[in-house]
Every structure is written in C-alpha cells, then in structure tokens.
Length: 324
Image 1 (cartoon, rainbow, N blue to C red):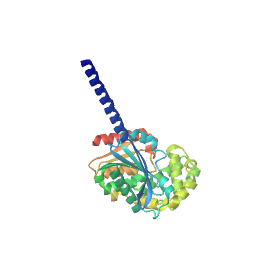
Image 2: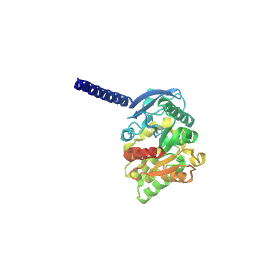
Image 3: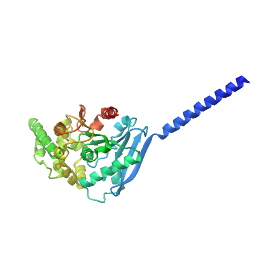
Image 4: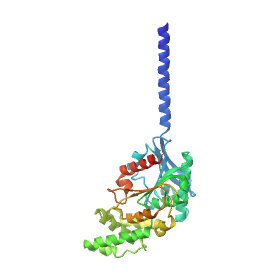
C-alpha cells in the first residue's frame, strides 16, 4: 500500500514537471516576434516589420539609407545576429519598397514630412511593444533622419547609433570630389577626368550625382558602378528624390545639432567617401555629449551593415550591454 502511494506521488510529480515544462515552452514560443504590417503613418499605409526571439528584449529600429532604398534586401545579414538580443524593427519609408508598392505619397516629399514620419514610426513601435525607449540606428540617409530625431527626442532613446551618416552633405561631396579628381589625375584616367570635370557641388543634375557615385565607387574598391547602378536607375530615382536629397545636403549638423542629450555612437570606415568619414570625425570631435564614441570598421566602404554585418551586430549588442 505504501509503495502504491509512493508511486502515485511520483507519478503526480512527474506529471507536474511535464506540465510545467509544457507551459514554459508554450510561453517561450509566444515570446517570439515576427510582424509585417501596413500601418497608417503620415496619412498613408507604410510597411513596418519586426523580428525577435523574445519580446522582452530592447527595441531597435534600423533606418535605411537612400533616400528610397529599402534595407530588406540585405538586412537578413545582420538581423539573424541581432534578434536574440533585440526586437529588430525595420520600416520602408514612403516611396520605398513595400510602402511604395502600396501607393505613392499623397504629399510632396519634404524633410519636414520625412522627420514627421520618423517620429510617428518610433511612437507606434514604442506603443506596440510596450517600451519606454528605443535604440535608434540610422544608416546613411537614415542617419540624417536619426540625428534629427535624437536631437528632438533624446528622452525616447536608450542610444542613437549613427552609421555612415549624412552630417553635412555638401561638405562631404566637396571633399570627395577633390579626392576622386586627384586620384583620376594621378592615374591619368581620361574617362574619369572627363566625367568628374562636369560635377558641381551642390549638384545641379542627377547626372552629376551619378558621376560622383560612379567614380567614388571605382576609386574606393576598383569597381565601375555604372555596371552595378545603371544611369537609368539614377534618373528614375531623381524624379522623386533629388529635390529632398539636395535640401538635406545643405543641412550642416555641426551648426544645427552641436549637442546631443542621449548616448551617441558613430560607426565609421576610413574607406567611406560617400558620406566622407573626415566630415563625421570633425563633427564628433566638436560634439557635446555626456557619452559618445567612434567605432571603426576596417573592411567596409560606405555599406557597413551589409559589408560587415557580424561586427555591426556585435558592436550594437555591446552598446546595449554597456548601457544596462
């Protein structure tokens, strides 16, 4: 009889252990995040997606570059490393990717509109995932939007991470134009010299921007970008984006944002001449911030998130760990 009762007790204990394990597994399964949504932002439906292994992790929003180039084509390279430590959110800005496929912007593209959209997206994500703050990561053009947001709403950020960002577009383009001219002259590249001689800063046409990017790519990594980025792509892009890009290029964050009130980090490469790294270094040196740091990427040119995705992810995780 005693043996029967003992076995019965053991059976109940085993049952409870199995039950608890099942409940734990079920709850953990519910913590994963994989969302793809059409959210009304700025009066139109815009795509926002998020991935994570655990919805209790900090929220991180990656602002893509361009303007007009979605991060979805290359983001898998870093999301797979980040989703264990963050809820990684992405957004196809208006006239970009899935958002563009759903319909064109009703309003003319302006800096004010893009800044307003960014603010709405951040506030939507904070509410959706029940967070008080977010890690904001701005790449290239996304860095232009991100630094403006960090200046306006530091209270909503754990930290702002500037990646190959636009700090003062016209100064950056001028420095890079001089660099590629000297390289073309030194190598006696007649094709480069002919096309570079047509470039003015500020740019007066999409063709000038095309030649700037073409020869910047060539003298950075030896590749002619007209094979990677046909002229037709630049022409099509310019119809929507050239005016707002030129307007953004005038903005000098050395003057407009001399101080940032949240932790700020700069991911830079000495091989980056699209957003000339010397311009960002100068900004960093003069920037007032209680916590600031430059992190260098030695294997990248401009495209740090896709060219060094593992280090990019590792450094973001380190930042999060250091602030916890």
